[in-house]
Image 1 (cartoon, rainbow, N blue to C red):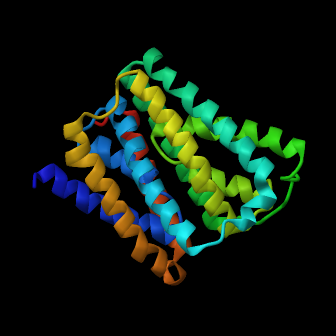
Image 2 (image 1 turned 90 degrees about the vertical axis):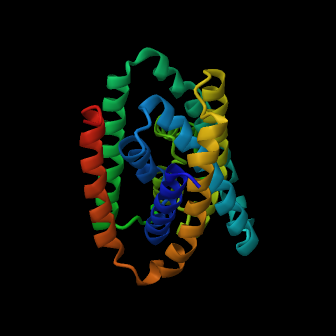
Image 3 (image 1 turned 90 degrees about the horizontal axis):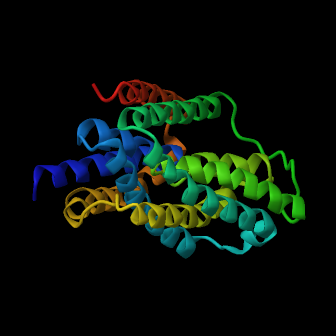
Length: 264
């Protein structure tokens, strides 16, 4: 076992544990690790993070589908379909920015996106997400709104190599009135579509990880993230969620600054 593989297993397990504790996918925390600790370039790190996100998504969706009923999703079919379509479009179009931005400018963009995720974590720490039911999820308006929200979320997810749950779940709860469990399950299904679309586009651009990188880093980190998320989810009820989100937000801010400066 190489040092990279060992590091990927340890980092993946710790990130999975933290992600399980606060209920996020963990891709937002994996990206700085790939860039700053493993020394992967931004152009290579984002597609690699997307591969890892797909591994964790498939594992999480399989576990959730085996333990929870998917029937509550039927009440949000139109909104979910809209979000899926929008996320697919956004995740397929956004990677084109890689061709237009220099490595340094792309790193600055990633720094800004990491700051955005940190802001969401801080907001969630002080203002718990409440169902407001702003738009009927069964209506045509629900589908249209889903496409718009999904396109933005899918674009951000593809540019960071993340599943997008940190944005999808609040959208489903606040805008469409879903409960947290239903929103979490729907988010996984939508994210699988978005991540797959992003990977197809990155594949067409020939920037996906090599087999060696998959074997040494991506797959071990993805598997360890799934394993780490299990005890994290079990301990979530006893964890100081507000404090954890603030600490992780601070870490993201520091990572964003370093990433935006070109990892110096």
